[in-house]
Image (cartoon, rainbow, N blue to C red):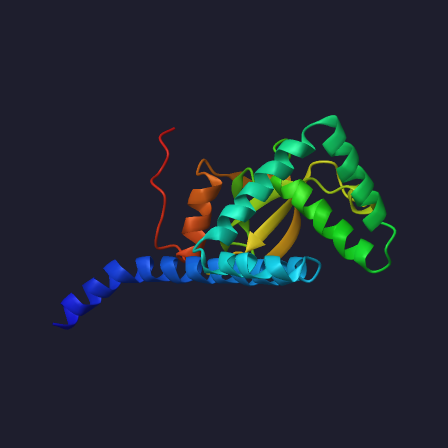
Length: 207
């Protein structure tokens, strides 16, 4: 009986966790949408409040609005006028104390990670860490630049070593390229391997 209960748990647990995560994400978006709705109502006539309040009861409306807003923003930012507006807003934010430090740092990281022309998190590798003879999976994020790059030999790589089972935290390493072993597995396969603590291993690649 214990065996069957455990097997049933393995079947339902991934689905239950997926639904729970999605519900939390939608709930957070609904909270932001409700706050924006009240902000809009504060500047509109009273007779328009009731129809707007009815929008709160539409399931998934916040997700639809978010996707639409992202799509419209992406379309607008690809033309000359949209790029000019984005540049002007970036210039305005960069002159606000405290805010500019946070915004600039986050923008640099996001541009590096999500840019289609960037190389961050494009390749998974093996590196000896935290001691010789002990290996872990890391992701190539680029090459050291600036003052750090000037003080190091040329053939160096910057790596991100994620922790398990939470890969959003980790360590940054700067190592010689010769100390890194390239992997043929994709970044998604490497993340699954890390999150599962080595249980879900990708199949070996035919050479």
